[in-house]
Length: 458
Ligand SMILES: [Cu+2]
Image (tube, rainbow, N blue to C red; front, side, top):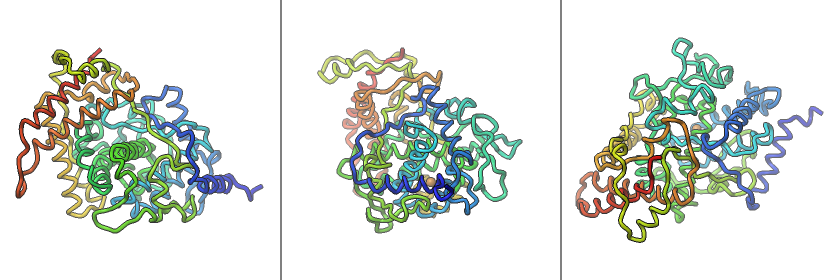
């Protein structure tokens, strides 16, 4: 019976799955925001993650590396392929493949039938210290400086990692770090700045990949710190998967919103094609190529989509108000005064140490700093204009409700208008620069502010 080890069977199952990639994906699994899951499902997901880290239930496919479990195999695969799959065009498809692998094993080996939950950072951007995801009930908070920055609360305090940063202990480490200072929580991008990055990423795959890998992706890794800070072994921290599911979701949204570019793949520096191989060592032989991962519904293990996510329960969406606005009726009165007092926080920059650690070139560092400065200009513009972001109502009482399709449309339209207005208003004068017509900017802003009245505070 040893000939048919669990590992061999799983690999067999996987290559069979892979061989049907060309088949249509009929029932995509829905990846949901972690807060969207019931507490029972949150616990089931965490239990499934623990099962993948249990040597009895999930023995390693690749014990010669020192790995004991499937979970550690994936850390090893990530470490092995880190140079090819970061700071390069392969960043998005490679991680999309990696997420589909853990999703496959969570299901086949550990009974988790949902998709990997994602972490919509914007919901925690204004008060990361209150994030339910980082609470002691679920993934735990900051590391404890008195214990080598090991996490000492949450459900993963007993994890013993195999592939550690040399010279450190084998717990999961975190060191919330913002602007080179210890912080109450990680730096997370707000929804207005994130939308502005989206608006800046409409020209090519390369523009999107550059903008979103450097920030917010790197910002989350570096400001959580500890294991997440070390690119190679960052999957030691289970937050890696929630974080990367959200990075992947941003790509999914970008693909939906830019259909002509959705299946394209390019880079500013190097020539690439969708036939470029991607290496996963423990799965798919050497057959995986970028093209497999360009859609989330290619078939086989690639068969999922993303939910609309959640909004603060205190914020109610009034579809009738939007329809009235569109039919030219007079807008509702201005929002309650409490809404006018709310301002978005600026973004704290990624630490210098972190940038050095990621082996960035000078040009890449400049790109990160430019993006940070741009995000803060946009944030300031939105604040000065009196735009009230939903982010400021999030995470005060940890009560959430699902977002509808209609609401997503209106919200995206509103955020795009604010981001576009901000972009035009703060554009850097260049040779031949024609300043935007101020009337055009204020028209966009007025339209955004009108749409914002579709939400009321309960
Ligand atoms: Cu990575």
